[in-house]
Image (cartoon, rainbow over all chains, first blue to last red; front, side, top):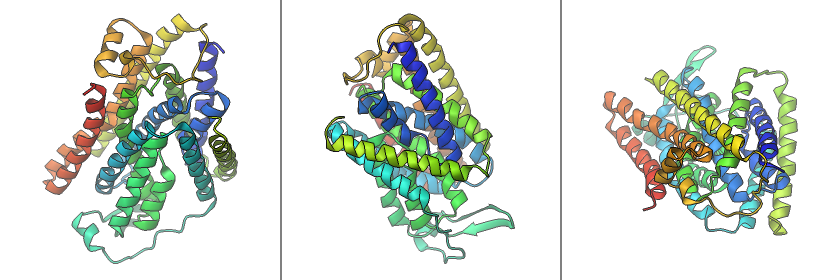
Length: 278
Length: 119
């Protein structure tokens, strides 16, 4: 393949990944690395570097529209970013040490978990919980505009959420993904933050987390300009289009298709990692 | 404040995408018909992995240098957002969160500058 053909095909694939990722809310980065490694035979380290860059682009692009709606809680975000950025640095350093087959196996496991999580309905955050002393001290409790007027919430289990976010950051730095799945676990289930607040807040955190590991990737020579260029431009264009044409009715079947794709890619990554062909 | 920050993020992304696109035109114009190879990991040469190296290759008019500059701007966008949040918390006289935000900023700057200047 010549550089022109390669750039064109990667651009199209990234565009579709960004579009589907944004329509389904599952994120585009998670399918990019396996697609690039399995179908384009790109070394997994280059693929992770390129994916990380595209994660920053989509997160920062989408966050601009979220902050206007008043859902995201900047205090929760900033506090948890201490955990995610530390984790991201650790993950990025680990990624330069461990063999690529191990990276593929971890990636496969995360994909399978994401596919499972996307098929399980989220239990809604419990309402009217008593205020937690630590969360109150950290001024995390807030309110957001709901259908019946402003709804307030009390954040729970801050230490558990903080530790889980450290793990989310480490995965993000290790695999070049947004690791939305772990963030859901930490913010929705442990900290009992309402869905709308946790989704928008975690979106704003993803870019900052990815920026923490991107510096390490860049200086280690994992960010290739020729590969990152079509990936970043494609994913960005796809996700911007996706956020414009959000159609509620069809996302359900789209989610099903996308989670099957994630499942298949996860199995392939596991297979390749175990048999050492990556 | 939040709206300004949101627009800052959007502007940062659009500017960096424009720089990447500009670099892409130069790069593709010069190298379109060479074979593409990412199967083997070699690691990027130092002109594409340190900030001074990227600047030098931009001055030399290299397309890939421009792409890397765009990517650096992209990485800098969320960092700028964190830096501006410090101002926001300071206006609210929230010392605790000024401290938290400074920690996050220090980690980000360590990652970007500490490792890519080559210290």
